Length: 277
Length: 277
Figure 1 (cartoon, chains in turn red, orange):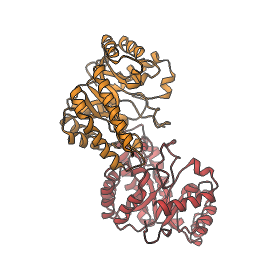
Figure 2 (figure 1 turned 135 degrees about the horizontal axis):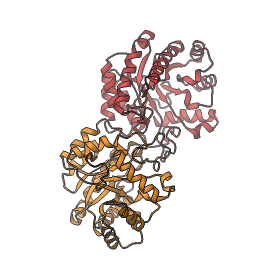
Figure 3 (figure 1 turned 120 degrees about the vertical axis):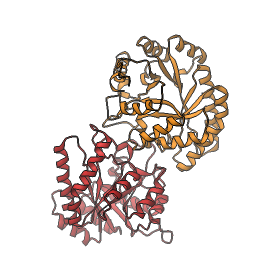
Figure 4 (figure 1 turned 180 degrees about the vertical axis):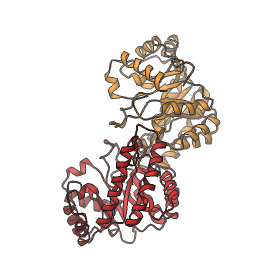
């Protein structure tokens, strides 16, 4: 919220997945031409590319690379899969370093074949295992609590309180939290936990979108800000009251919006950011 | 859990909606013939029936009528709708009285056009308004916290902590809580809050089913116990550790199971209860 200048988009970052039909070169050109200053890169957008050169291409377009999405998915009932996850997280850290971004978002993971307690322990162990690599690469790890509807198979970290607990346990400038309104808007403790997150210098990232009524798909029916019931401006005010001065990242997965002309859709994204965040 | 007799189904209650293709007479006959002792009646099952006679029919089949589902849906942005909700809850209390059950489950409601705080206030006000009617009719009100994925339009009460707070605020033997594993299994505070709920004599009802991976429908893709990742036995042990001695209610909404032969499905329900609860 920038009441003095509601047309200011200097803090707007867009996730490449938001405009999924575009490849990263198209996304970069179009974001840049529209005055967008930040981009968060999903790893699939880097497929078959030289990552360092891609990072340079983004910077040449005037874009700050806010983060790489995503690492995590640490838990698995079988130890072989957990080892593969560690390897993959190390690759993600290396990719982030090559790309020239200082942050990875962690979707922590869960395995429905085991207890949430086991998954949570494996998340803790996984972060502990890769932390030295992250520190060496200068890449921060942002734990993103996911909505409880993803507790079975995507993340056993489902509230900001849990993410704060975990981040504080590590007590490292390289472990913090990504706050996403989609996952957390319903939580009666949200305001309090955002304050706590900021006070402990763990508020690394802020993601926005909206919750549509009815929502018809568990993954890909997110709305743009203003399409739903999330009080995005209010939550943003809580985030910025902590001193957070980073980018506000629009992360929308939407089968409907992906069907639209993406140039028209980008205008909607920017308007929604201006009017409803 | 009855380790001394794993075939004991004396505490099994089934919600009429679980076997939705059956009318209430078919449900009663089939439940009774299978040895089921408890039934929770959904209000739509009472359509076009004499409610007192239906209650008598159920008792004649040897069934305890555990509760009537459901009241609630108190919040609305417009006052006219809130008044209609109060009227409807008074009708539900009267129906419960006629049916001869001593409990109504409250799905509290939410309106995506207003804040969660407003919806929560209207829920509190709604319960306060109808409480005298409930007391007069000898009908208890069980606040059911719903999964956060329903916070937009079905319930602004999304954790057991919130439901406990609200029930304790009323401090009445006629206001308590319904614990449903589907809504609450993900919550790291669940064990603690179940204990609190029991200690305050607010644990009125216990509902079971399972969470399937992947879940493909926001409403009607619940699993039978054993189909998914919810630790039903563990949660039941927490509930019974409080001294809870009531029915264990199987409440499954499932487009898939409703397509099956319901007599075969009833056997699955009973086996799932025996093996996984």
